[in-house]
Length: 369
Image (cartoon, rainbow, N blue to C red; front, side, top):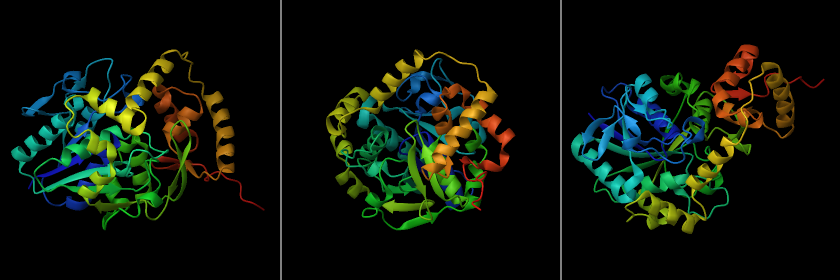
């Protein structure tokens, strides 16, 4: 029995797809085929935008338009990707969404996989819900990938179920704004569901999927994410997976409708600028240029711990209970290359604050008299 899951935004959505597959079908033999972007942002990949087939060595042909990313695959320097390591650590088959031929190209990739695999189920999975954005929301930051997969799946002649996990966890659209379109709950993740991906979340930088797993384990509060310190509410509703009508999502998502006939990624970007007022790849280009000019400073544990104490006190005063390691690195002015050094230092010095895979700011609070 074969299942296909399209990870709408790539990155952490692919990890969430593995968690969903294990939760729903863990005892039913084969694992799902996951179709996903190689788009890990500047923390992992210093090259702006998503990677295509030509950015890797060691890929394996599945169909004329679809390539498998096995554990032996490697991104061609200076590019980076988490997909080969995911393939090494998880039992699923990861296949590459190559967006360079626009929505028509992604549609063809999905159609070829469906023809080849004849899957019993096809799910389009998004963590957070920005796939449901109209395009003009002031909090919207990264609509391109999700809109592109939605546009493609909307043109595939096969039944595709759209699923939104952890509404609001990506910090793009508030959960309250999504309630009217979210359908029935398909599953609510519990602690046991997070176990199959627990080792991955020890190193994978996804904040949204990290918070999804943390809430499945019972973590509640307010988590700060990203360089801007966006506060995300972790509630009893956060671990839920909702079904959403795909046609209704398309009717909401103006960018997805606008790009349905695109044949290049440049076209998709141009239309994103027109519809949403920006392209997230432009943001990555600008940030990559800025990062190049930043001096590389030595990682000094004493300085880091001193800065951390100040940050934690200020964050608690804002009502923050948790943070991601990415947020900590950004707040302390550390480059992405030092994120793992930061994480190792903190787990060694204050392991009681680790609410996997988040950092708990309340664990060392002094109780009020």
